[in-house]
Amino acid sequence: MAGGSAPMAVAEGTRDTPAVPGIPEDCSSDDAHAVGRGPLPVLRQVAAACACPELLSSPALPAAARHRARHVLREMDAGNIGGYNHEHRALGVPTGVARFLERRDGGVPCNPGNVVLCSGTASILPFVMSLLVDEAAAQPTGVLVPVPGPPLHGAAAGLAGAVAVPYPLAEERGWAVDRDGVRRALRRARARCLPKALCVVNPGDPTGHVLSRQSMEDIIRLAGEENLLLLADEVQQERAFLPDRPFLSFKRVLGEMGAPLASTVQLVSFYSLSKSVGGGGFRAGFFELVNVDPSVLKCFYTWGMSVYPPILGQVMLDTAVQPPLPDDPSYPAFQEVGNAGSPPHSRLPWGHLAPAGGRGTQDLRRALAPNARLVQEVLGRAPGIRCRPLHGGARAFPRIQLPPRALRRARALGLEPDVFFCRELLEATGMVLAPGSEFGQPEGTHHLG
Image (cartoon, rainbow, N blue to C red; front, top):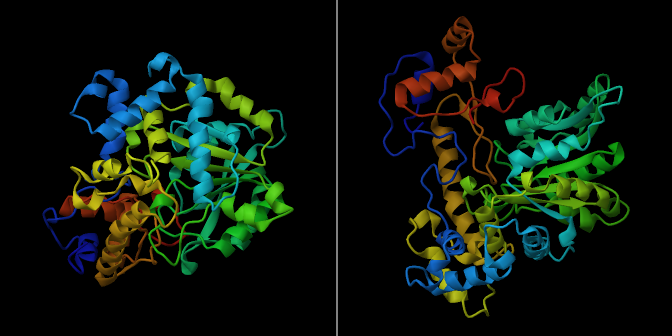
């Protein structure tokens, strides 16, 4: 993409170029570690000491990490991470998560009993959606999913026995949720299913937008009027990098809207360790239920170990959401641990998951913002490519205008035009991009993800 008209030359088959120096071969991934970003060392050091207690007395690990590992092990059954550790999963970590959410949301209360740990959004979404399915009903359950949006949501609806109902995002308005478009999708869907839930992704994936407060309030009102469960995929929240468009959680906006919506609109929000400090391989996250009948929680406790994250992921999540406070003696050491041994773009202090405005969050935004500007500048110089402003997330979703010759060749091969473009780009440059059709896109348009 760095070579001006190179993408369109690739599409027309008139350029044969080797791999582009300085650009990762796989540009389609949102896996931070897979594209070269270093880990936050303190999380792995604490997990290592918990898994191998001999390290608790070893100078190979910083004293602060060993101190935190001892604290974690004291909360485990018999001081051993090898047990089921039900109390730590169901009470200990959720209590730390609840305090983290209260800091994030400006003091909006959080009941630890409404927080459930999980092994990531991909594994838990089908479970949550399945609770809405009534197999004896005359019509199947419908779940509204954004287009463009993560393919995960539609797939999860299918696994749950529900029907995915696509609704459009407004590209001309920076990929905002099109409230009128949602209502049209609802009206059409009711002929074939009973819509019960509305999925919203904020920050957007793959679109890179961050919803405004006004847009979020409109979505909440719509959910209330249509009696829809709001499923808020907020896993990219740590990647909102523009100061004038900060991330706000649906839980916070709902609470600040006041009665009657604050106590009636049902909400489930999702958080992922892999999209915050990285570490998708450790499979850890959580979700919070708001205004949902407490009896629903029994379902997750019944499923038990099939829902919860692996123990090392759980330890890392617990460590991430409960950083030492600045007046804690171990705080300076954790600052050093967070900075040691990582490449410059990943040097995030322990405060990475601190409340909005904390030093770590600012460092993360400073790392992401120039990358986003560079992506927009490079794409802006390429003829036939247009990219909407980016506010957050890990992707851009530029629109491509393909030349007639490329469209004809794609039709001849029986391929979607954007799939054809990505294949030609791979052949010519070695770069891997995701075609926009994988995420869904407005009819007659073509994008890259």
